[in-house]
Amino acid sequence: MELLAYFQNRRSVRSYTGAPVPEEAVNQILQAGMLSASGKALRPWEFIVVRNKETLRALAECRKPAAKMLQDADCAIVVLGDEARSDVWVEDCSVVMANMHLMADGLGVGSCWVQGRLRGASAGGSSEAFVRKLLGFPEHLRLEAILTLGMPVQRPEPHCLEELPTEKIHRETY
Image (cartoon, rainbow, N blue to C red; front, top):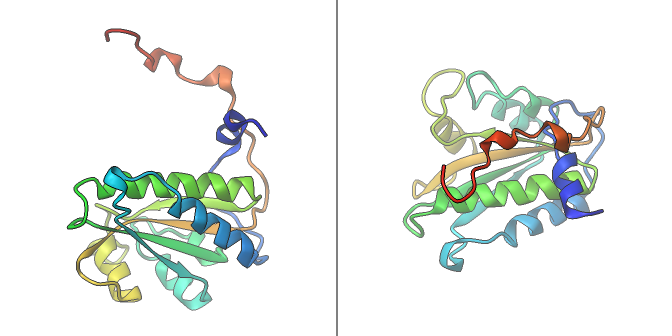
């Protein structure tokens, strides 16, 4: 498939069949994340792969409004960044999320980006504090986002190139 077609086809998927995501697919999605570009090649990210159903159900309360798609996901990848390691950890972790999102779609796996940084949990407090308490990651790491993974109930229609807001493109000057 042409690279632009991958971008067109990548859509957030929030409804999953319950079928398992093959371990090989999860590994390839993680590899895509690990291959991401990062400032000064510092790779300030860490991942937590969650497949336990009880933990996924609990994780669904990490966001207000709740990230309910986590309840039916087969897997979630929590992306953490080390702000002491890099001043651009947010950008680096965002590139990781984008790469994993695209890889999941390329493998036929549905995925959805659940923003964690600067968000609040359903019961109050920050999403980061909620996820840290649930998963036990150290204080020096910061929550960027969670990528949900599951086999999609249906494939959303691809983005249409003709509908892109080209008025947002400026050349030479604004």
